[in-house]
Length: 394
Image (cartoon, rainbow, N blue to C red; front, top):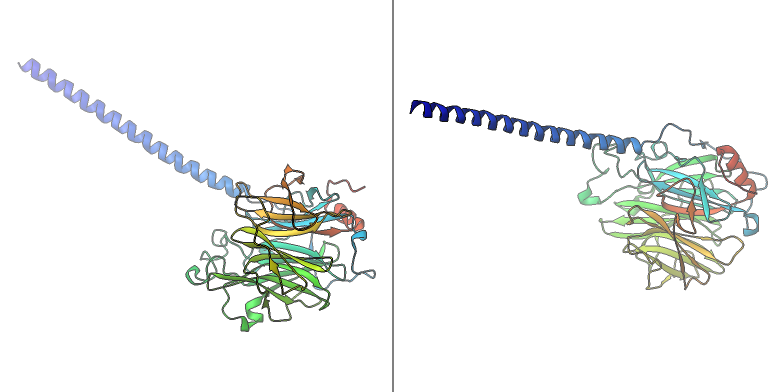
């Protein structure tokens, strides 16, 4: 009997020790897996941060106090142009980029896919978004951008997610516009213009964003139009006139009536002004005889995309009767720019997205909120040489 009891006791002890050993090993495995997972997540985050951090490389531009106006500076016509320049930005670093094209189909980034306009230098919030570029009466390039870094807290530029409480002012709550001017795309003047401080009569605005510029023949001035939001819900387009140096707005911004949209893009075609804008993440169209009033919206959306879309921009295919409407399909994964062509501004042929259709980005991807204007052959050659761009111009 004692022998049986001792045997049972021995077996129980062995089973107890074995089970404890397996439990400890299982716990060790679980702990090791958790440690490995945490380490893997950390490495993934570090990898993502490294992937989004560009190596040190000169932007290629120079900020100057004053520009030297060329002796032959004048209003350029379509016959003077031989190519295109596009500006766009990227979310990962809140900086702006430039790409050039000879044919309007194939665009090559001038700085090897790296930033040209450094948001950390140009903006109050250390980030720029929504770049727009156009030509003026004096032949200069006019560049306007939103002053905003949506990842400012993560980047260590502020202690809060936004500059001001989101509960009251909503997403972004940015109030400055970045204004820049150049005759050669290399030397630029720069101003970071706070709309709320310049015009206290605007009241307590939430945001001002997505500025664009167009020459107003009647006023003989460059008109800047952009979105202003109030009370975290009322967003509309406003317009104002800039000084000749393009360092500030001189007139109190007034609302463009009858639209109720954002991200406007105005182009004069013949004797009509065409305004493309965004409503409920769709691209809409309106036409007027006047540059800042009288627009009659079309009730149908233009773009065919199911994903959320913003930032329409219209440019002409040089030497043809076709106009290209470009827009940011920010809801796509990955995001991309979409394109449609029109001759009559009533019917549109949808021609795909960058690198998924006839439009190509030769050395860059995932551009956001782009805008296109025109260049002369001499300007293209200067840019090609300055940035050593791999592009055929002849």
